[in-house]
Length: 319
View 1: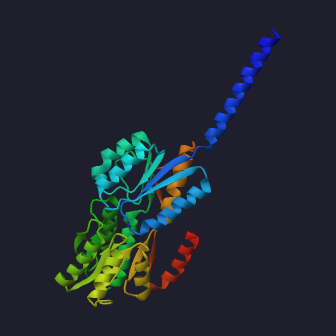
View 2: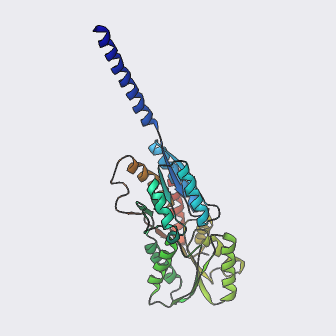
View 3: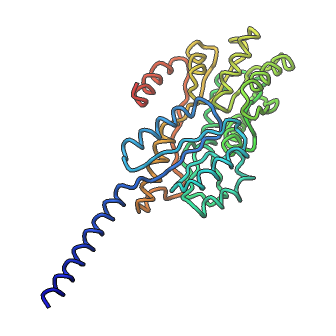
């Protein structure tokens, strides 16, 4: 009887020990989260810093940061397939062609936590969008254009692809703000996120439309591409430039007065909030990523704003 009792106690003690080991092992397991951009622009360097900040603060996540080198939807989908094969717990992606990627994104969402950042896929089964209100950002760009051209004039718009949700919304916001003004939109030129082609588009526009008054770039690399084209043509100050984001060359151009203004986003927060909120959601916090959208505000910069902005950016990046 005593021997049987000892065996029962030993078995129970072993079970408790194993359970304790299991809990410890579970607690030590890190979440595998991925952040996927839509191109290789330097804009994403800041977003990566945000991901790394969240990774460090949380301590229980590993971030796989991916950049499609070609800026093509097919390459982005290959990246997403690869991440699924590796068994990631969550993916934050900026869809390159949301309309045609919706069915594919839905398959991703069936297998892992999926959110969008920077550019949304509103018709997909993504849980949430984190990023800029791109229509509102377009309105801000429209205001800069009207300030740059108080008497009106012709403008040309440049972007990687018109299919991307962020491009459509930014251009929509610009057109809305320009309604009733004397500003005329000639057309939109696309470059498939090819920086060489982006500059060539701007150069061709300056030749074909000698009366163009302002060149407008919707993507991060468009600002420097336009700036190079305008400087090569010797038309600084004569042709105004309005663009997006805080590319170093763009900020230099704004500070020098060669770029009238830029609408900057907060890519650091894109990365930090995407990783942080996915980790919270996967940890059981159902308030995280609720509501379908988490909007991160933009800021318009002109010449006198650059120094303060750069100082703020250095603080955020820990430089």
